[in-house]
Image (cartoon, helix red, strand yellow):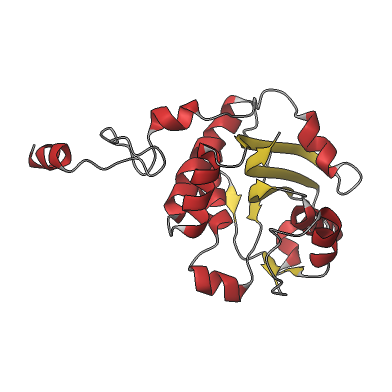
Length: 225
């Protein structure tokens, strides 16, 4: 009762909408999160699939939120990536995982692999946001995930202001696989925070097929339509 009284005087607020959180909610209001635009996971998204067509053979390409600039979705990604709130990534990743189950994706993947950060960037930020998204998804899907199989061995400058061709040339030979035996004959789900050109995901997909994985699938917490 005392905690309820304190919460009434000093309510915890949603980090995106700033409205008070209900009991049991953390970081983001469930009602607000449900109001954000999402992809219908019951149907294959041809636009997302076309993004990787001719680049890497991906069986499933899925995203949870529809991304647009200056939107609530962008604010969520900003909280995860830059505001030291990786737990928001884990929470939204868990929602994403449950949505995939509801859409029939349970038991479709053997192993979730987040896109890695270079160790210098990870040390500076303190975490890899995609690790937390993958962790939340794996918890919901009741499958394995690993943040150390895919590794980034070259630290390049930010991709934010680079064009599509530059992004692809900038991602060549910057990733490696530790313990390749762990991916052999596995149905892999590559997990990222947001799909832009798909350059990093494409390079990781080629590496995984080269190491003998059975299938590459792609998931991002957000992607533009």
